[in-house]
Image 1 (tube, rainbow, N blue to C red):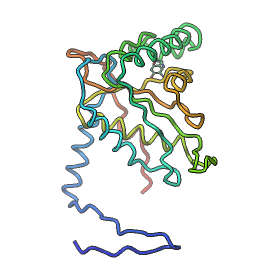
Image 2 (image 1 turned 180 degrees about the vertical axis):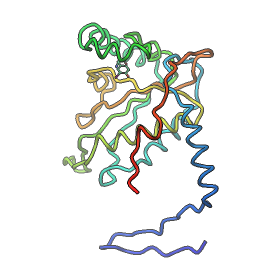
Image 3 (image 1 turned 60 degrees about the vertical axis):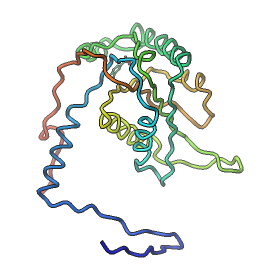
Image 4 (image 1 turned 120 degrees about the vertical axis):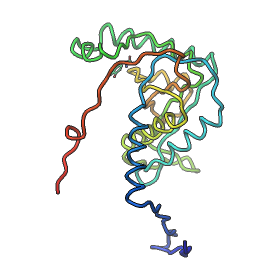
Amino acid sequence: MDKKEPIFIEGYKHIAYQQESFSEKDMLVKSQNFYDFMDKRRSVREFSNKSVPKEVIENIIKAASTAPSGAHKQPWTFCVVSNPKIKSKIRAAAEKEEVESYENRMSDSWLKDLAPLGTDMNKPFLEIAPYLIIAFKKAFDYDKKGEKTNNYYVNESVGIACGMLITAIHNAGLVTLTHTPSPMKFLSKILNRPDNERPFLLLPVGYAKETVYVPNIKRKKIENISEFYE
Ligand code: IYR
């Protein structure tokens, strides 16, 4: 492949994009294989306490941080908790909110919608999983002088990064679930996060417990999730 020289646009360096080149046949096989693999991903709520190398977690986070983001601000911090004392604090605080949610905050129709998934206010995975990754969104940032700087499309950006994080977790042969205790301000306090960060999503990461059952959910068919305009 001939290597193209960089160009400058309005004074900013741009480098030639290295387009992948698969034949249509290979593309078809790759896209089918990737779908088959992703279709095996399930939210798992029961974890083994088996340890996971820290470098794997770092790679997963690096993969998530390749996500596109508004003006390439990468407005996220992934906090990784393996310290048992901090995990216990998080569990206690999360379950306190969950008791309130399940008993008072969630409507009957919401509880009915959740019933097939078998969730409840007990969150032992918050202590058992070797790692908790807490994604924080950065509403704004601080520059070197301590002045506030803007971030853009923060929810979209962090949502995409979390999707990629989940994909990377599955790719590594590990499991997770998207846990959203609400409200989750307690996470900022326990983890002592700066005032520009807000908790976005909590993901326990590890191996599934040896025998674990997941709900027999079905995924919508392509006809029901897409419209093609040809
Ligand atoms: N945050 C609660 C409740 C919950 C809500 C939805 I929507 C889910 O899909 C699953 C759970 C909990 O974590 O149990």
